[in-house]
Image (cartoon, rainbow, N blue to C red; front, side, top):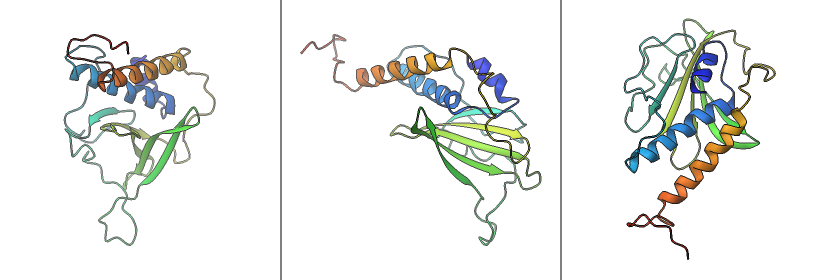
Length: 185
């Protein structure tokens, strides 16, 4: 499924469900790593890309790679700010009618068809960022229709949400004890 999403990222912007799936998998992977278990194997980028190409996808732990936005591209600057601030559009993105993602959109200064979108999950542990680069017409946003959607994406998304919530509950100490037994009270 991850390979399917990466392949689609080469030719179109990702659907909100696909973005949420990738970022949720990173959160689950991080929790499993914290308790010393192997699980999902998604690679995080440790350095920002240099001159990224259209379709490139990068995932960062924002706490580890502080300069993850420093990709070597000259992005459009806000007018009237002495060229010090980037012109960015901030977007709240819904999955199943709930705001769960935030997006930051930028356009390159030299080629305004080249865009960068940075996504993160909006919650207390929003430490991961997914960055997607595309060179496309300005008006192209999310493709119309979902005919190329992976048929089991919604099922997997629901399963990951359940597993993430179970794992979060498990690690919060409410049912996890030093003896690894479940509290039946």
